[in-house]
Length: 385
Ligand code: PMP
Image (cartoon, rainbow, N blue to C red; front, side):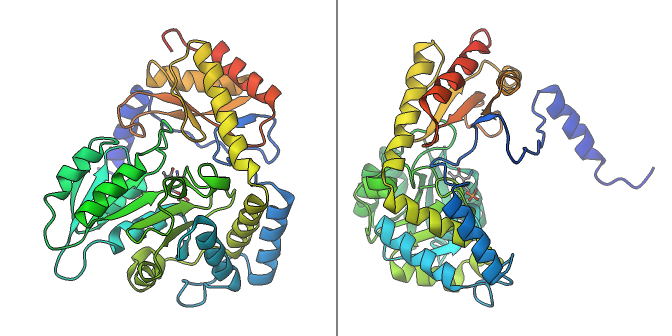
């Protein structure tokens, strides 16, 4: 027998191919002619000249990489400014920047449970993002997964709380179907049980709330002593990285204990500089947030009017159901061939096993392009889609 310890991956891959679940990496062109409704550049800031200039300036000043972990050589003035301005914008005492939203979520979930001697309790929504699920798995806390968007189930789960801390974890806007979580109701349940609330606002920040201050801000939770928020810098801010926002002593605790903060190389200066410039643009031009919501509503109205199975968006994400994984892949490929790029979600990325196209609204999408995008999606819809 030849030495081939990974032979099993080939048969697993064949099974995925048979089920239409293989994934392909497709490098995009720098200046693509495709109309992009697949990315998360919600505010159209990724290529804004001020943002790219700030990123380039930061790289020239501080280097292409941050050079070390945040606690060694990886912190710059840019990181500190970004943290201060993010916290102030969203209405929280303090913020801590991470190399991604994923590592920010791992940090917040693991560091806010499991004090010495008592692992605590985690209550996690069934529709939560993979990074929150992984955080629960890494934490030593007992985890209860509650039915999607069900504050009453959360209340019941919290009754199992022992003497340790309890943390309720939820996306603010769920990434597949774009629906919002009942944040005010969750906060009330948490307050009554003395539990903390961790909200992943990856899809709400820059889109929801006054001038894009996020879903927690819209729910009246800015500065709430029991609320901690994570955001990504890679969607509305068009850059890369993540952050945790909350009470100053929670942020201090993360600096001391969060493994993905301590053992990870700090966010690249270009990403910090780009995100800071984008945040300042958002502050100066709050209409961008309202515009992305209007574009999402426009996409939904037209898709629904054409008879497609879609859902009214709470933020920028508009889902369209497909009859099968294969039909979804084909549909997305046909749209692409016709010049429109849309997201394609299949198992295991979808909680209920129903494949979808996912269209993401952008604040800089002109009306004519919106019409063209919908026309293309409708024209290539499979039977039963
Ligand atoms: N949370 C949610 C809800 C997300 O959709 C994503 C990105 N797909 C993340 C966290 C991770 O953020 P990042 O891409 O910055 O790692």
